[in-house]
Image (cartoon, rainbow, N blue to C red; front, side, top):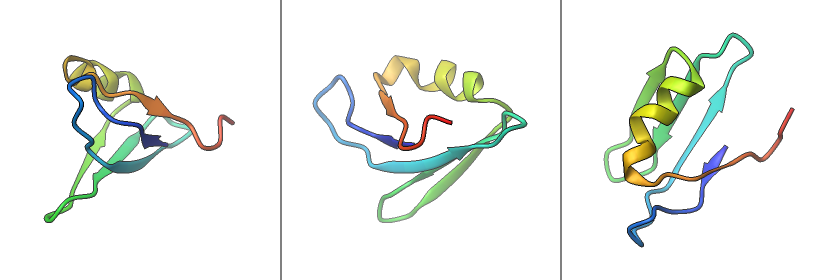
Length: 61
């Protein structure tokens, strides 16, 4: 997955993966990269929903 920006007009670049067991890892691409590990993709979405993050899947399967 990768992002296409936030609703606030800011671009926060990240990349990540959602594993088949649901574990989701996001790595923010910034001066200091900050990888985050979530128990599920839904947890990631709930945490980031207020920032307007939109996810684009590179491989939907």
